[in-house]
Image: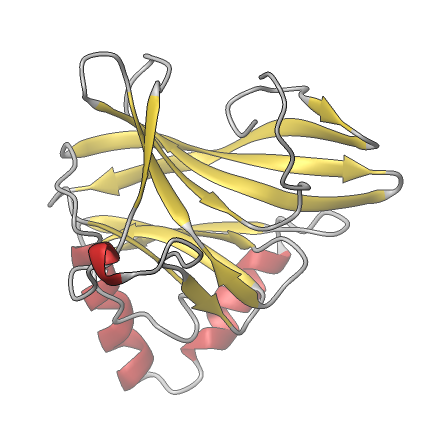
Length: 200
């Protein structure tokens, strides 16, 4: 669903919005709440270094709009298999079938960034107690009812942040592999679209 612009389910239509290009100088991807956990560990998955588009799949529901999925696109090939991602210090093999690794959001905001950008962000927030106000002000510049986003440079990388669904919660991130076993996309799901089985 995250990869199909215009996909419809029930009264929801998913629309794509390209919000920026993620810089990955180390190939170590972090997804977290940047206001609360800028020090978050990268995923247990080495990704290509380079610059990759970030696309939000925004759910249009009557007069409301919510970020349903956030995607980093690494290749054009369509994913044929999916795997849940965990942070470096986590082990998904220890989870029960009904569990999955997730990251917590307490500011209504999720993000993607390289590990090196995360280090600079953490240092900046430690040195400047009110730096979060700068982030909020920049996010407000892109506000749409009811979501917004941010693309800000930090060191050799950048922070791409975005509203997280209906706000605070815990959200999983998945990697999709193409027919050659290569990572084509990484997607965070924000629990907006009903979890139904259907042919996509």
